[in-house]
Length: 229
Image (cartoon, rainbow, N blue to C red; front, side, top):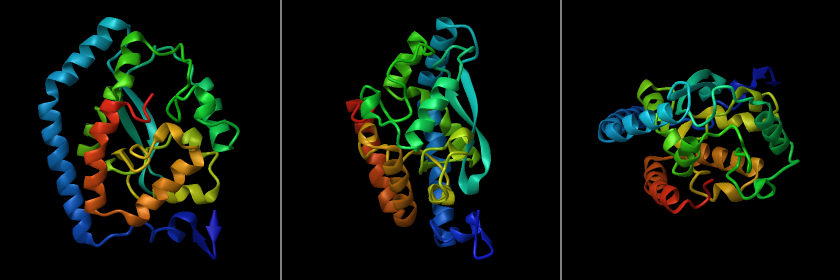
């Protein structure tokens, strides 16, 4: 989409802009924190991977294309929580309905936005690791690589983005994150549009102080399962 001769990315490039020193500090913080967490959580990562391999056939890691900063695609890593032959069409139809406002998380059995209330594709171990958000931990390697940051919008799936109205794309003005403003703001109580608005608000307000606040809130949200599936 173009506006006054500019592409949408160029027209919204000012959103999320920060002084270079902020970007350098953020990257250093991301590198240090993700490296330390990978080392500290190493035994847990190995244990989860072994449990997945013993529970069902297929690899422990799941790789999926996601849309990140400035709409650049990258490969996201997660622990596999579904059968290897899982059909994605049901989830695609559900998310498309969310974007169009034809469904809400409350109509999905109170589950977290994006997650189906009844999903037979999920393995027993997969259900457990999702419950405690352990499936997200391999994204620490995405942070280490620079595809993601510790705090930012949730990385979108390409088939979601194809349904976006133009203003939704403002959420791509910053890197996607392992956790974010939406995740600590009652994620299962939000519509898709509210999630996008929170992402854009974060991009406009982001600071090291706000990032630290979100990081401090995240463990409590996960452990209390507040807003979680």
